[in-house]
Length: 499
Image (cartoon, rainbow, N blue to C red; front, side, top):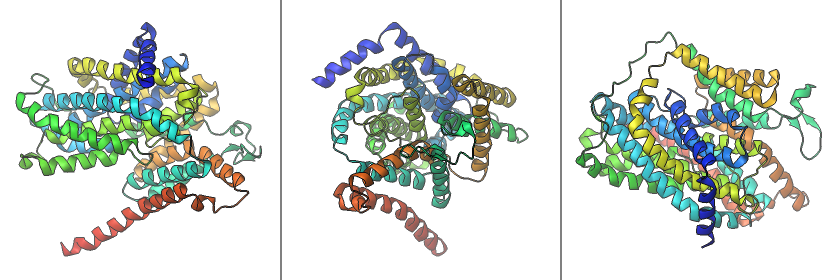
């Protein structure tokens, strides 16, 4: 009953005129920016993050929730019409969505993606409403050693699932950890990696780093590809909707996708990549129309899109209860929390009940707004795909520059953003994943603090990480997650010649 009372109180705040307008603004702008090629949810939040600082924390996070969901909805449009996934979790959508669009069924593909996302988002938010407070109570029992082990597990799983090389993923992760160490040591007060530059004593701004790695890097990538021949976007003819047969073939994949996405996304080692690919493979196996897969099977869009949205909703559980992001998008939200001096974790539900429950209530509202807005306005969003690359690049750089400068009023921070933009572009060209880097930069300082606290409590005994049962189990799972993919890839390579 306490949960329902808190949720009703959250709706009381979320349904105020100001928060309703902020939610609508968030979903509209999030969808608008998310529709643009290559700008996924993480990039969308990074680009728009500086523009929300004029609001109070509650209003800002209501808007973030809208941007969060809007960016996810918008990403499916580019995946289906342009064959460009906003991020790796959207790849399964391109496998069937783009062929559907090429066959003249873009309207059905977009509709099943939007409705499936709504169904998964609603179910996931209901589960989060009742699951998150319990997880928060359990998290209060976790000691620094367990926190350190959970962060190690998050690092390992995100690194092993991103990209096609664990070595590249670990290299990106360690670079992020190094970035997080720049500035004054929190426990000794000594500067580290500052090289005598006063601007670095407070560390590298995570906002500048995030905007650079996502927004500026995307603009540089767009500019670098200006001379490449582009495939024209699919035209959207006919009505946007689903036939009775489409509904019959979609509703089970929506539910199955939700069952994959929510529990996996809710784990501290979760993420959206694994459940979307699992959903696609399961739908391919269960479908009575296997011959359509690869040619545009609607189940291959419905299931992964539901799994993707459910997993993205699920990542809010470890973010709110443990303060651990398990994706690049969640890392952007953690940066937003830090900017407003709010530390997500076990105490968040006790210390910031109005913010938390208003945020959860706004997820319900934003999900409904997105369904109402997206289906009628899909033709408007599609027109954005015709924006010339030069104008798109200029707009991204303008927003990025003004956003970073508005926070710090420092040209140095703008230069940092552009420097990391070039670094992000180089990493992308070299096929190094960016998500482990930003995760290391954001979580690295927190992991160091928990590591030192654990040693302080144990009077300097490093065995505390393996003598505490929960910490040992988590570290063993992390080792399995790191070694497992390597062994699987080796076995696959050995089996290839025989095949």
